Length: 116
Image (cartoon, rainbow, N blue to C red):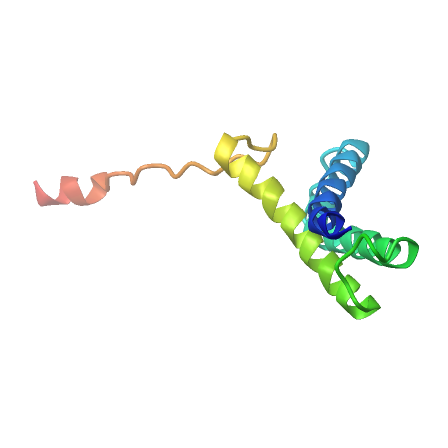
């Protein structure tokens, strides 16, 4: 059963990414809620890790509930980081959250006219 311990963390990370995608589709583009997605991901990761620890302790590489909580925190943050890395690598941007384009500096025509 050692091989099952190896896949426990990636399974939790994948589950957190899926649940966050469902939440995002359910709430739409509420930008205030989107700011809390890393925290929500950590909470979901902790819940999944604690649940796995108590339901099937052989499947998760944790000797105590505290270790399972730490594993859940790491899994939630890994899910958030994986999603952000995917967005950066594919160049996908959220609608309405594009980068602001800086305008080129305007010439100071008043000073030019004074010199002549």
